[in-house]
Image (tube, rainbow over all chains, first blue to last red; front, side, top):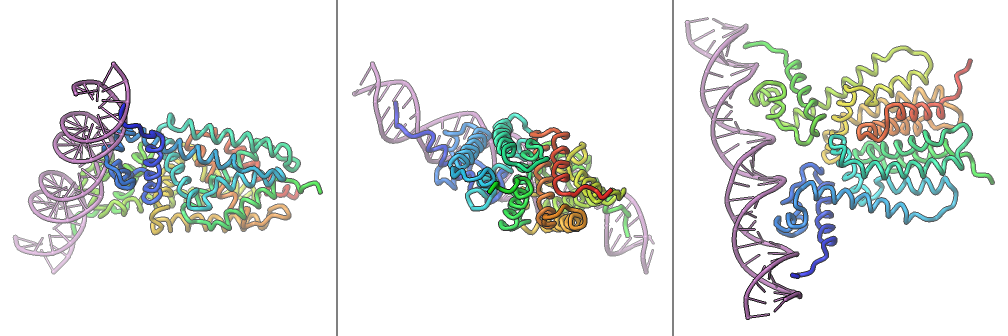
Length: 193
Length: 193
DNA sequence: CACTTTACATTGCGATCGTATTGCCAAGGG
DNA sequence: CCCTTGGCAATACGATCGCAATGTAAAGTG
C-alpha cells in the first residue's frame, strides 16, 4: 500500500475551507477550485477526496450537524429544567463566529434541501430528537394549560426564526436572547422555592 | 416617443418567471438566460428592463414584499386583536402554493442578504413595521406580565421559524398552525366577555 | 418626411464552472 | 527489484455564466 494519510482529516480540512467560503459568499457559489485555493491545495486533490461536488456538500453538512450535536451534549450543568432548555437553545443560536458560520451552512442547506428532500433527512432527524427532548422537559416543568408538544415545536421554531433574523442582521444578539428568555418565562412556571 | 409599453408590467412578467425558477431550483442558480426562456422572451429584453442581475433580484424581492403587505392589509375583519394578529401571521406562513413560492424567494433572499447587507434593508423595514404593529396589538390585549416588544419579536421569529420548517417539510401545515395558536393562547388574555 | 428615441433581438467576449483524463511520484508487497 | 497502487498535480473540455456591443424595427415629434 502507498503513502498512508488520514482520510477523515483531509476531508475535514477541505470541509472547513468550504465553510469559510460559504460564510463569506454563500454556499451555492462555492466552487471546487475555490475550496482548493482556500485550503491551499490543488483542485486535483479536492477531486481525489470528493469525487463530486455533491459529495463534498453532503460531507460538510454532516460535519456541521455532528459538531452541533457534540456541543449540545457537552452542555451539562443541570440546574433547573428551564436552565437546561435555555442552555441547549443558546447553543443553536448564532451568537459567536463559529455558530454564525454553522448557521449559515445549515440555512443554505435548508434552502437547498427544500428542493431535494432526500438530502434533508439528516436535518429532520436532528430537529425531531431535539423536539422530543424539549417536550419532555416541558411536560415536567411547564406552567399549567400548556401543551408540551406544541410548546416544544414553537420553541424550536422560535429559535430557528431568531437565528434567521440574527444572520440577516435584523436583531442584535441581546434582543434575540431577550426574546428567548421572555418566551421561557412564559412557558415555565416559577421554580418551586 | 416610441412604442409605449407598461414598464411595470414587463418587469413583473420577468420577476414572476424568476420566482418560478427560484422555487424550482433555488434562487442562486437562476440566470438571465433562464429567466428569458421561462418568460418566453429574449435575453436582450431582460437586459433591457434590468440592467444588471442584482437589479432584477432586488425588484423581485420588492415585488414579493409588496404582495405580502397587500395581502396582509386586505385582511380586514377586525374582530378581536387576537384574531387580527392571527390573520396577519397566517398570511405570512406558506400554507398554499403561492405563499410557498414567496417564502422560498424570501428565504433565498435572506440567505443572500446575510452577505450583502445593502440588499436587506427592504426586508428589514417590512419586518420592523410588522413588529411595531404586533407590539401595539399586544400592548392592548396581551395578558399581564408580558413585554409587548419581546413578545412581538418572538411571534415574528416563531412564524419565520415555522415557515422555514414548513418549507423543508419538517412540519405539516396543521402542526404549524396549532403551534401558532398555542403561542397566541399563551400571549392573549381571555377576551373580556 | 426626417429624426430621435424606445423596444427589443443577436452575437460575442472573457471568466468560471464541474468533471474527466492523464501522468508523475512515492511507498509498500511479492 | 519491480511493480502495483494510492496520493496528488496539471490540463483540457464543454457548458454556462453576466454583461457589453451592435443591429433593427417601430412609434411618436418636429
